[in-house]
Image 1 (cartoon, one colour):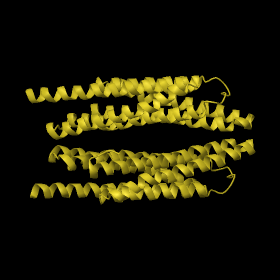
Image 2 (image 1 turned 90 degrees about the horizontal axis):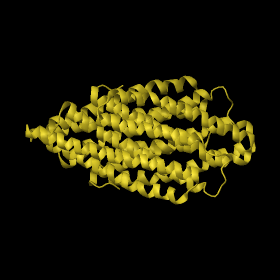
Image 3 (image 1 turned 90 degrees about the vertical axis):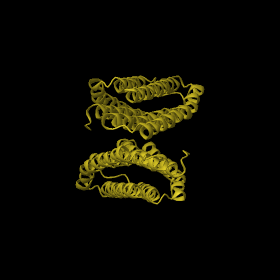
Image 4 (image 1 turned 30 degrees about the vertical axis):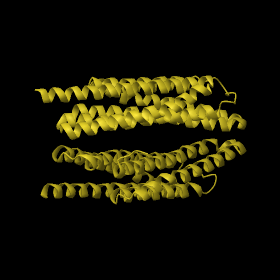
Amino acid sequence: MPIRYNFEKKINELHKDLIKMGTLIEQSLDDAITALKKQDVSLAKKVISKDDEIDYMELRIEKECLLLIATQQPIAADLRDIASVLKIITDLERIGDHCTDISEYTIRLADEKYIKPLIHIPQMAEEVKKMIKDTIDSCINKDLELAKSVCKRDDIIDNYFDKIVNELMFLMIDNSSVVKQCTDFLFIVKYLERMGDHATNIAEWIIFTVTGEHI
Amino acid sequence: MPIRYNFEKKINELHKDLIKMGTLIEQSLDDAITALKKQDVSLAKKVISKDDEIDYMELRIEKECLLLIATQQPIAADLRDIASVLKIITDLERIGDHCTDISEYTIRLADEKYIKPLIHIPQMAEEVKKMIKDTIDSCINKDLELAKSVCKRDDIIDNYFDKIVNELMFLMIDNSSVVKQCTDFLFIVKYLERMGDHATNIAEWIIFTVTGEHI
């Protein structure tokens, strides 16, 4: 049927845009963590300036979704698919915001020598990045098992969070002169933990799209 | 026109549900802060248990939105109105989540004597609550000026955030034995700051619904 064909073509275009937005965000997270690690202010500024592009992508995809609903009047699974994209881009955009938030701390911390080299924070960010990539993949391929595995991996992020927060608390107890820097790192780690939550939200939306059931 | 009448009736019902969800969340925030202030574990537990009700409200409103799009095929401003409700309930639900997050810290802190009585945190929460109430009101009444005032008030929340974080840092520098408690309060204040961001997001969505333009 040509109508169905047309609809599927539009959905494919929507998915391609979602991949593009996901790739932009993975890159932002990569850059944000590299900038933080290397105290690279110009890279941090690049992350902040790229946030507009991510916001613009969100608006564009959202417009496409609304246009698709209005012109194609999808029902059941097709409507769920588009509604999920609307929700997913909100979470992706928030992850992008948190890359900016982290980069603002990188700029604040630029002139200070770090108390110790960053090891666990980049490892945590790597896990978050994998979660984001897998959520996008599971969305495109309607891969229920992959989406479920993302939800489970939120525990890994929470463990990193607890571990790093504990480490920072010990550093502050040990030496009051590092309180300000450690406080900044507490918030950076909190942003990473929130990103894990957003990836989990996205995965839950994908499960909803495929099964019609919220978990 | 009876079709138009039917649509407007459905939109009114949707708005009523949105008010209900907003009222639930205002109550949760009130309870979460009272519980934190009075170290009232049973009230904190009540906040956590009520989160399911908020999640359920989100799902129900979302279903209504999808059904409305599928059956009434709205376009232009009507479609934007429903799309905004879909986005707004996501932010409202996150505010509800943060009430739970704060209550979990209340339970953790229940057996500890607070370093000092809480003054600024309840004041900050009161401002956030007003923002939430005003966003719901501006959504129902399509009150552009009220929505704009909510966006501006995010600065008040950010000022409270900076002020309280500074205060906590000084307490930690002054006395290393309070580091753990102050760290918990840092995250509590961060949750309140995020709530302000969510209220601002909602207000921005309302401005979009009314004007068709994102700010």
